[in-house]
Length: 280
Image (cartoon, rainbow, N blue to C red):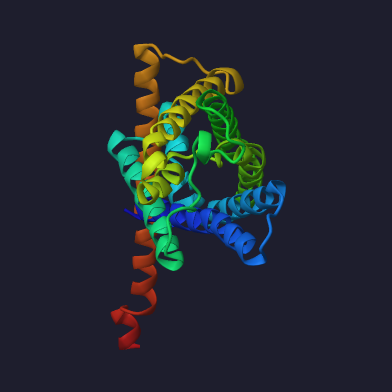
């Protein structure tokens, strides 16, 4: 349950700060009475997403791994990071709920749905691109981000280092992607604004769910086979050995936990409940 709460809160804050910065930038443009260059609004949004992701990763990594993105969870599932599929489903539900409530909060604060950080093509694309180029951009940024996430979580030595790399990766792909499609690479982040905006946004939403998932699956395969150098399919003996190794690790953790409880109980008995001390 702690992992699901972690994914919910982390995704909520990521979407609230990231999409909230997009909305704020647009309101600022209207208040000033003239258009800001697309590069400036893109930078504001990309940096907001990247810094928030780095912060959330450092906070929630130990609890859930801080995926905060269904595409990342798909890649972790393919890489064998979930013991049960039910846990993977719990992550997905928590992420979508967190994103939806975050956008709901922005909607309540602003009272409008025309600009909530929607992703899309044609009129929803800042550069008015058609569906083809937008799909290509969505696939590329999703693939790169997931690959960077998977590599960082396994290679960087500290949580701060991992968070910095992942946050920088998100900033980079959004600096590139926002002008083309509004910045997707995260099905939860893309679907949430579409739910409130409806219209073209909700009609185009399936693209920003399916494409990142396909890209994430490919990224997981590339990471597993090329970067880690592991076989994509294991023999029956290898699967049994891996299962036995997991069980042994689980038993070792349980034993260490029981020993720790025993030590705590012994300490309480020595200093708080020792009848011999009362007799002295």
